[in-house]
Length: 316
Image (cartoon, rainbow, N blue to C red; front, side):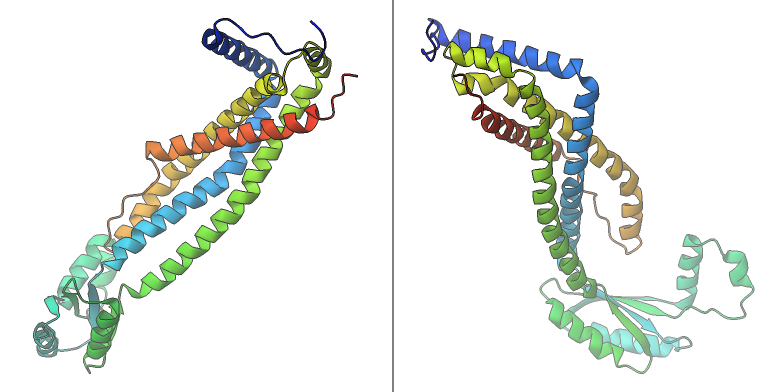
């Protein structure tokens, strides 16, 4: 066959297509397994690069879930001054109930607060040494669902001005801070995603380039017998797929380990605020997406390395 003559076509193109790709895949696995130390190092580097943006994505998702849940918060807590009489507490509670926008008012006496406090914190013996109950009476105020956050704050300010009230806590006041954190995490995630994604592609490209350099003479022979660049690049793209797939699995394991370590303290934190939030991140779709991103970056790295190197190979 003359140089640069077109590569002969098979009479059964579909079968030949799958047969050729199967052979290339076997050769690619054989190459990476024979150099498993190098392959493992590449997987670890890519996995580390993918873990940071993937972790930030999960943090952002959980913050978003909490923000949506807090958007619907329709209550605030009123803490009375220590020593406020039961009459003062009940009078203000009745004044709250008379408001059309308020749906329910639940009062907690100092004795009830002490019992609840003692059930959570094991300091019962220490509390018995006190001559008086240091905890104040309080009230949990629930408003109608259609009351806006701004109106909720107005109602809270109105009752905070009462003489018997020490403090009014509006849980939704955290919402603005939480959304600001959410926006920061989103932007940081994009920045790290671009930086680490580019780094993962370059790591893959460097590894594929190393494999390509070892086959330069064979590539020259293929070019002499008329093989196309697409045919020559095929094994190096599969190298990229293997590197990207393995790196994404490493990232998935790192993220899973982080989820296991953080799920319990995360749940305890939000339950302390009286909220039940399911930790987001263990869905199969997330891990499937992570693997797809890794494979895409691997293919991109293989393309970068093979395109750059093949242009420099001269068979004349």
